[in-house]
Image 1 (spheres, rainbow, N blue to C red):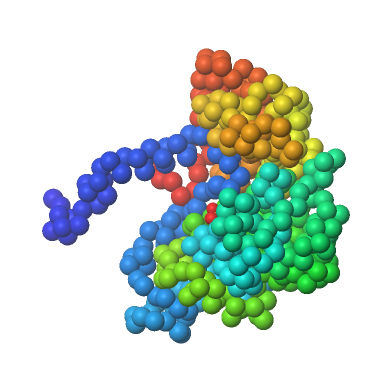
Image 2 (tube, rainbow, N blue to C red):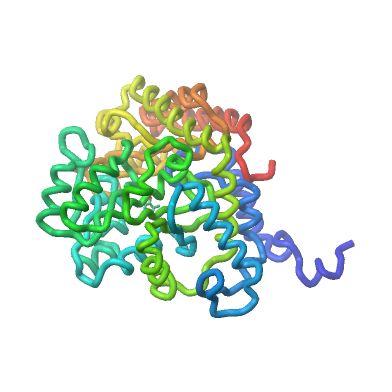
Length: 422
Ligand SMILES: *Cc1c(COP(=O)(O)O)cnc(C)c1O
């Protein structure tokens, strides 16, 4: 018998069976497929619970102790917990956890340090940078005089001679370092030298790699960069959100830029989820997970090289591999679509100096965070490299693709992902 409360306030499956069914099907998709998009992951059950809570009901413009609405007895404690855990985890002097996601976090940094049309510099999108580092279709490329640096034509690594030359010429207010499709470590100290030479604020955007940074699998920019931004939902495995770390001297500027400069009320349910993720990320298990992400990426890269794939920069130091499919005679888009049908989900991606157009480029981008969160290791990476070779070599062979999809699903059944009820 339903209780009276169930009748007035029924669960999702009763209230909206259509959405409930689609969520359930997404749970199945995330369980039976190998998710290789390097910016995606699995949030834990605890993170999902905090994020799906009544905290979504509360308005709390301002910061702990200085709010514009009453009733903050618990919200203040939640935001302070999130901030103190993150500061301890990253070794930072200050953090703001209110940005709605990575893009608004970056926009707040421009607002804190720049006037419209000021010069700024970032890695170009085709070289592996992010839209918000000044690319022309983004607000950050329209409202600021943005100059893109790139990677070297010879080894496809960041071209520091070019970064320095452009910085001396354009004197940017902000120098961004951070990537979305770059398989190598970032040398934050080298960027610092150039920023100091031209009086730029150095902003490191570690959205993709923040989980690697706290796990000790990638060097940290904290203490080197003036400001460090990140999403919270990629390798860090929190809910979708953004955060900004900075030195104490910039704390006021950053906080004012986020609120009231750019946003209204913070997403308190997200803040709680971030606090939980920060707690999870401070465990030895998380450190091991971060190291395993990189170890898995290296084994996968070796396997792919063994199957004749061509990798941008020849391999990887991090969680991500960029494959140039030119030598395999297939475009990135066709390969990504065939791989998805085979249960291997990735995205098509430009490679440096790509002769093809961005909507049908030469490469695909893959990464190991999600499959590492499921506990997969070297054995699975070797199988994956073999399947990828079979699928891209015979992308229109429907029987082969069905067979690979069945094998992928069978392997996945041995590695139930976090956060999804079995
Ligand atoms: C993902 C990403 C962002 C943007 O994050 P959203 O949450 O998608 O807005 C910004 N910078 C970098 C380097 C990223 O990888």
